[in-house]
Image (tube, rainbow, N blue to C red; front, side, top):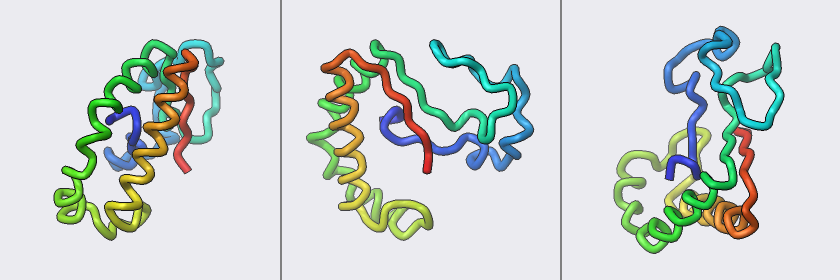
Length: 115
């Protein structure tokens, strides 16, 4: 489900997002490079072939989503900036799953931005 949810890599590492060097930022196929990005490396890009794989993975994961209720409540419930509970988190995952499934059916790529 890594393509459905992702964290800002700079937040995970505790680094300054403006300090990223050009070598640290992978090139995004089909997108021009921004020489002065506001927040480098937080854009999610998935090519159409990657989206098809993501959609197939979601079809396997979706029926098992309820199995995550206990671990979510034990570890993540109430985190600031996260869904308020498992039902909200599951709804978010289902919505992303719908997006990935539809994009895969249309042979589209995906672009995701954190908010």
